[in-house]
Length: 315
Length: 314
Image 1 (tube, rainbow over the protein chains, first blue to last red):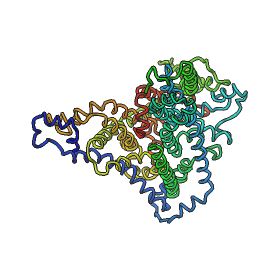
Image 2 (cartoon, one colour; image 1 turned 90 degrees about the horizontal axis):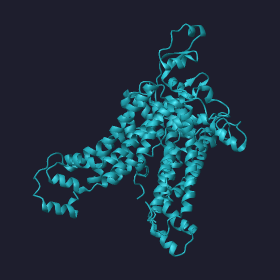
Image 3 (cartoon, rainbow over the protein chains, first blue to last red; image 1 turned 90 degrees about the vertical axis):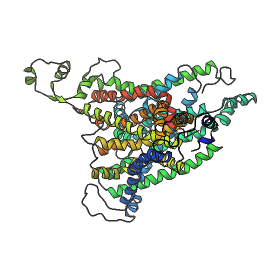
Image 4 (tube, one colour; image 1 turned 45 degrees about the vertical axis):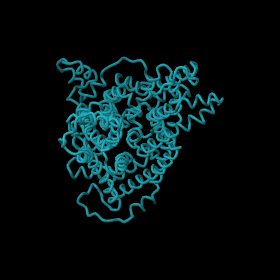
């Protein structure tokens, strides 16, 4: 293949006795396909095929709880109904609130932590490992045990807040105004370490001589931060925002176990809405249309974002 | 990674000290929920709902006994006529006028998590390392497009494919089977695995296999005997990431499993006692459930960065 270009290989080939005329086993080309085919086949079967099926379903009135039914095409009926429905728009608003605020807190706290850890104080490795623990847990299990921590009066969360404010008689997850913040808080608790780790990778990639040069030029620490640190870390920060944005847009498990969309529907995210339509009301075609809309939204945003990211990265 | 000791930009001791305090304070704050849950696992039901919350309490294994057993309440007369309890856990349960009627399903669910977790991890690593090797070493047509395709499957919201996978699994009889879950989690994990492993294999010099092939090994033998051992660290990191994902997954588990192959995450929120969730038991189950993850996180800390960014920023 491209072996002959390589100086070391050329030398090895000259030194070694002439290679045997025919190698045993498969040719490289065949081997490449044997090695790659299973992955591609599996991804086609579990991702692409279901995705296409989902698109087809979104134009029908199919109901998964009635397998024998006569499936009729609906044209764009499902989509029209969806976009005309207030619940759908509300669930999208809840999602937007959740995604925006959790991203905001995670980026601010995550970056600050990374910046502090990068000072390389004693024991920073140990603390980093401890801080990372929440993101390694199961979101559903996290949601479950936070309902306990959020219990009015008897929960530790209320006890801590009560210590500072004097009031323990409130319920984060049963109060219409507090519940949207309750899910933001748990998500921030869980995923700030993720943003922190990526920012840390960014900070460590900054060449130290840039700072030394700036120091010699007499640039203030603030100026160094703005002109060196931020631009160098920005591609990393943007990557963290991309990953967390996509993940939070898909959010389901943690919030279902924490509030199951309530009280009322103030924490009903788009995915929870979709799950209800698909597997409780069994409006499969209708839910499939919403899935398509969500998918197109994520993919559209992600593509625009990745373009912007590439521009930043190449600067 | 580290700045040289005499660098003029090395932070001063005072700054380091302040940074250390702030980070440690955040870490301790962020650990409170986890520590609290572990503690709750050792509380009695009354201590678990005491007001104000109890920091000091008499530890009991009741929560753990409750996780693993089914119990029924009996009349005081019935209790009085029972022969003496044979085991410490039977005795613990009897204090609440209950008798053990059999094991709970928690052990089954935990075992399912282990089977599905390790099964999909094994498959992910085998398929992932093969594909990563091919992408790293061979001229594959449309290589960049294929790599991007593999990565893009990670962006799919599960909802976009959940309904058809549900229907497909129902058709194929894969619902609520270990095999079905293993295949599904493998597909989900592969994008990360291929990218991560390709990064590790790219770092192994090609000369190693080429030398082996000059010695008469076939390409496949060279891959098995030379490349695989060199990629050990990468394989271990990939395996642990896959395992943690399958271990924690909930969305597909709740949709596609009900009895036979149900994993622990959908089960834990359903541990009901008298009057709502049995909090000490839920906390005990949670503790048992997160224990392996804590262990692997400590093992994994070296690879966390590589795993999360999978070399996307270089």
